[in-house]
Structure formats: C-alpha cells, structure tokens
Image (cartoon, rainbow, N blue to C red; front, side):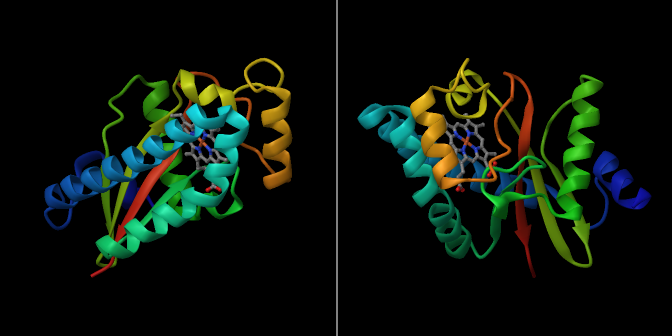
Length: 177
Ligand code: HEC
C-alpha cells in the first residue's frame, strides 16, 4: 500500500507517460460524448428528462467506448448514484489520494499506477455549477420533479448534497496487457 502511494507521488515502474496520454484522451472523449448528449437532453426537456437520458445512456456509452478501446472506463465514487459506480478498494485509494491533494491545494493532475502488469489511470472529477441541478442540494438546486425522477430510477441514490468544487469521483481507465 505504501509502495503504491509512493508510485502515485513519483510515478514509477514502466514508462507511464504513454498511458497517461491515452487515459487522458479516452476520458476527454468519454466526457465530451456524455456532456454532448446530456446538453441535448437538457435542452429538449430540462433536468428531469436529462436524468432519464443518463439512466439509460451513460453506462451504455462507457461500455461501448471501453470495448472500442480495449480498456475498461469507469467513473468511481464513494457516494454513487448508480451502484455500479461504487468505488472498489483500489479506487478508494485514488479517491483518498485526491481528497488529500485537494485539502493541501496540490495539483489534481492524472495519475498512473502499475499493479501486477495492469496499468490503472485515474483522473479526478470536480463538480462544477451546471452539475448542481442533479447533484446539489434537494430543494435548493434540485427541482422537485427532478428529484422524483432520480428517486424512481435510483432508489439508493447517494449522489446529492455536493457543492461546487467538490471531488465528485474519479475516472478510472484500466489497461490490461
Ligand atoms: C440532468 C442531471 C445530471 C446532471 C446535470 C449531471 N449529472 Fe452526474 N449523474 C446523473 C445521473 C442520472 C447519473 C447516474 C448515471 C448512471 O446510471 O450511470 C450520474 C452519475 C454521475 C457520476 C458517476 C458516479 C455515480 O454517482 O453513479 C459522476 C462522476 C457524475 N454524475 C458527475 C457529474 C458531473 C461532474 C456533472 C457536471 C458536469 C454532472 N454529473 C451533471 C445526473 C446528472
């Protein structure tokens, strides 16, 4: 464990630069596609409609980009909306790492960790203002009709109560040899 954390700090093992480049390109692309479809759904019918879009499309989109790139692309968090996004033990370490860095006002740049030949790329996801409509405070940022759709689709939702600038989660791309 200690070794892994020092790897994050100094970047050790095989040349990780190429994996960092690929991880950033893949998460940029996934983010861009999710954002594009989300914007269109918001425009078409507001947050309540866009929640329905996310519920049916987000995982499908990530799965298809994972398959196309021969990787596994995930968004992991300690407070998931979709339970499949709940952080694994490894992802928890990455989240803890970025929580500490954020507290220390250190750089939140992506990190690459190598574990038994498997390369893990992590990149923090920070909450911005437009996200509050679905991840902010109920009644304040989240409209009642949006809350209703969220609860219907995700009875165990834990992804509200966030503020702008909070660490919402991490992107995690796994490169298996
Ligand atoms: C229209 C509502 C809506 C908006 C706006 C929105 N989200 Fe989400 N978000 C969702 C839904 C619904 C899910 C669950 C998707 C799924 O089932 O995979 C989700 C899931 C996530 C997840 C995956 C972890 C989890 O909790 O399952 C992250 C990370 C995330 N959102 C970050 C953001 C960020 C950052 C923004 C702003 C740029 C944002 N969201 C804006 C509705 C929204």
